[in-house]
Image (cartoon, rainbow, N blue to C red; front, side):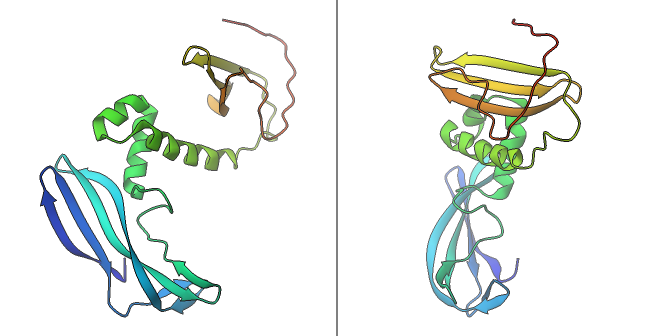
Length: 194
């Protein structure tokens, strides 16, 4: 993790705070060029719990001189703008596969909105790589469920032969099974409403 190092670890009540800094005079790479530091900004990220204590990473993030102007360095332990370390995001994704967002919120005291933002980021990232042109989907399931007294609809499209969800969408105010970003053609031989 050169040029980063842990400068301090402190315990405050039931929280652990890990302070990360960069070495004095360190240069950072931008587009294959070494750039010198302009100044730093303080940032904080939620990390996985250590010894059942909430854990936070704190760092002075360098802003560097580049040919395009001053830019903030992207840290290796977090996604830009997330507020969570990559380890904590991986934990949230793993837990969301086996339990509800409400339970994850209770376990880790993170707002459900922040959890949903992480989930949405990775779902949208994966949707970009979906290829509906490979083999024809012959057995498709469409499941739509109303939430919040029919003001929001959750729709999922599943390939039953391969047991994978092909697409999922949350639409407010109207049920919508036709919000695909990529064109898909269906030929139906059996339709069943439950």
